[in-house]
Length: 408
Image 1 (spheres, rainbow, N blue to C red):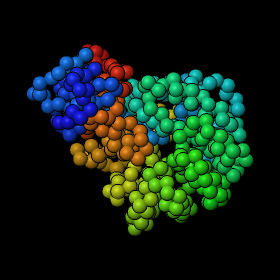
Image 2: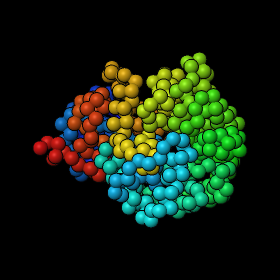
Image 3: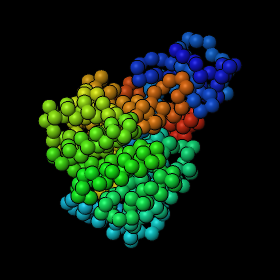
Image 4: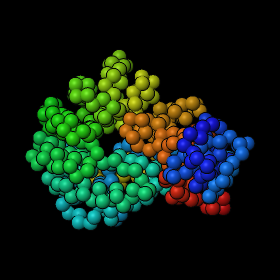
């Protein structure tokens, strides 16, 4: 056990007694100044602690990360709206823009605040949200989400992607707005289906990569395009990532085309993704367009999970919990062994921490003390039972406490 982050006198602000790690170790967790100060064996003499919680053997995990959500689209704060959009991505975008022209409430009232609250209750303590930048929203949605991020800074770590939902070339003001969005405080430059939306593979990518290099930011590109068209777009993004030196800063969300690649082509693309340092994000969608996530992870590709849409014009779904997201993956890919189920925690903890700087990623001295506690003995139990945490700590402070209700 390590105590490298301990204060000099060995004291701590909060002590979690009788905790169980995902590796099955019994530990005492000391927290000081918002970080994990020490992991101690149960029989080690203990210095003073200002406060203590006896977990009675409960499982402790690092706070979960949602690597792809749309806070500005969520309608959880509104009356039920039947799903209307049909067919293509373009048709859904058009339906969504019509909704925005008619809706006048703030994003917090529309559903962003309710979504953040539900995410925190389910154990998510860090996220990456895409915020639409187009001719309807202009920079207004970004301004609102920046304000919401500041208001939630003591409860949630939030990264923001300036996202050109209506395209870049096909929506004339967007390139300029994206440039402004970087100056306003967006963390990443977004992109969307270069050919499917803008009809030009290279033009939109030129703008996205130029902005990223100019402002020293990362990139997150939605790729719905399938077949050879989508695979070619992935190849182009990989090549540009290598040429620009942006390895480790580029993410492809969805990458539906990978579901159609044979194993030989998939292997070649996976090798290129690894060499370039490009990350994939998946919501583990239904239908036939979900990339083969276990195979990609086996090939070494960094894969993160995200909720994507929650009760919006794109999808009426309200699967918010990242634990539920891992359950979807277990069901979809028929994963049953303890080893396979435990590995599903990586895309919502260790991988987003490593490749995106989201969340603590691990229970370790020095890590930010975003911790979640489950009434379980192991990770697989949490996943197959779709558990909610009984305790959520953010920076060492209790944010959610269900222990009384759980005990009752």
